[in-house]
Image 1 (cartoon, helix red, strand yellow):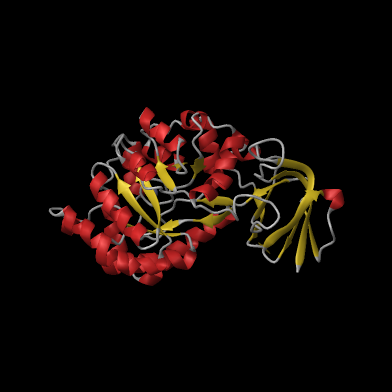
Image 2 (image 1 turned 45 degrees about the horizontal axis):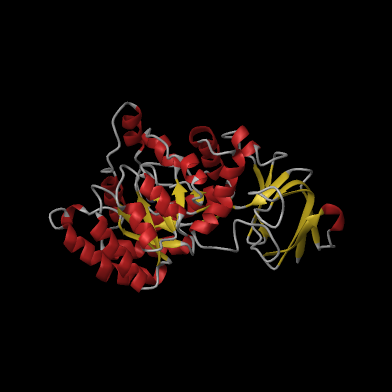
Length: 387
Ligand SMILES: [Zn+2]
């Protein structure tokens, strides 16, 4: 069964083969979807016949969003913590343990229901590829079941046993690192594509982070790092040194950090929801882009510090608060996320790419930032299927 998406006013391809970088836009275009892939795209008048036709009525169409950073396997609610921060209390990172306690106490069905609900919520807003981390179990059994649940909702699943040191290991953090690198990794690895570590003062230092990443790499997992969120630290340099796919947050960077990222294949993934929700200074996206760093945008969806699943909202935040142009922000939320996951089949529309397309209730991608908070994603083709 083939599907012709016709009468597209503005088609964002992210394909550098077209003019108009970075978005590679075509006007008056059409796309043919077959066997879950883009089979053809080009001028509307040249489109081949297909079994079914979807009339985009002149609207904008773009690749599905690639959200490369989320923590949606959890239990509990931290709305009161958010309210306290908005009343003036600073974020210190300690609230993660509140979620760990609730997650450990929750049954699989409760955790699964939340993960499935949030995955569906993200999809409704156009997220067709979503990375999902563990990291609220922090015991061998709880990390294994959280990873299993993450893998149920997404193949882009990440082992984050090194999120924080749980209370029972507070006096012997190196023993916890050994557990993460050994038995916990063994239990999680069958369900994980990636390993991640929160490299930050109060979480894991450079040596501990290096040990976790090296152990994951030895098991064949790709590397990601929570880096330089709360303070300048070793996370970015470590990510680059070890060839991580992504250094996430990148809020506090030295010139050496920016240079290291610019000379590497490590993507800087910016998470404006975290700065919004903790009322913190936003990362300097302009400095990164002007240095030639590849930038991605992601939600960081988690119950403590960024409880949003909305990529369109992140695009609007990035434009307003981080001075990205709308084109840069939309590219970062699609092609940038794909780079951060080392995927070439998503975040782009060209022949052979996975058929993940969004039809907007708007004539241009610009409206994603111009009309913040408005549900503009009208129709979604996810993996070749019109949802
Ligand atoms: Zn995170």
